[in-house]
Length: 111
Image (cartoon, rainbow, N blue to C red):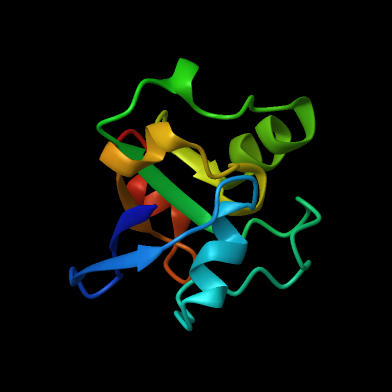
């Protein structure tokens, strides 16, 4: 399936992604370095922050307490998630996913 990603320089790219993998893995497999993911997807660093638009929160993989804690610590907005915790599902095909990993997350709070 194809995902629509907005890179930090506001460039739209489409990447192939395999259902069942995390969004972080899909981005890294596509050779995009905008999400460092320095904890290797262990939900502890907050460097794989993304904003997901055009999809209902109910259609995303659940946001567990550990992720909620990191998002709160970062001052992240409502539509933001950690890419390491979002699983690729068919519902993401219609989403617009903005990669925020290397920028200051609080700059996007509430967006």
